[in-house]
Image 1 (cartoon, rainbow, N blue to C red):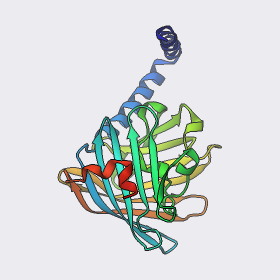
Image 2 (image 1 turned 90 degrees about the vertical axis):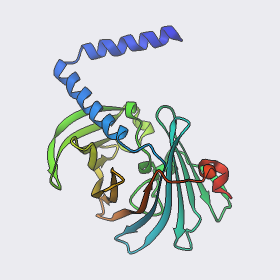
Image 3 (image 1 turned 30 degrees about the vertical axis):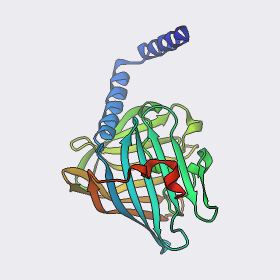
Length: 255
């Protein structure tokens, strides 16, 4: 096993050596920029109310809790309205390395199910967001490239393209993210389908500083194929929140 790993590393080093120095530096800059953005997300326990609306005229309300435990980010979501979706619950285990896990409690079935790749691609509560959009990407699972600059909402941004190393494991063939390097904030992400055609645009419409932390108060996802959009607003945001210790166990889904 050690020999196999050594050979794999040798091949990687040979491949890197064959690239122009400028391309290597460009890729490293893009990788490091994305890593700084992900590292800047507060690691303290977090709680908020979320309001999900769309251009189709419906709205949903959820409770969101997040904590870093056991070397991973754990996210709990519970729908509080409308009545027909109430008590639908999600538990997401977002690991820095290795496979993530996502579970969903379906009230009508009275049981929780583990989501696979296909179900993670489905609409989240009927919105233009997918379940897969709710967890952060594994930083080493992509190849990064700087592809330009753009000023958005008064923020000078760098454009970072991310292409998955294992396309079959990802929802998008590539993304192009506009990053404000001054505050390490994502301002917009363009998503492309398996043919490289634009699919969705995710923008952060509003950032607020809460307890010194930049917080994406309003996020919007637009499906560029049909122009439908969905919006998530975060309300009553609490950092260093007191969270139920059992909230991030699967048993809490079916309580």
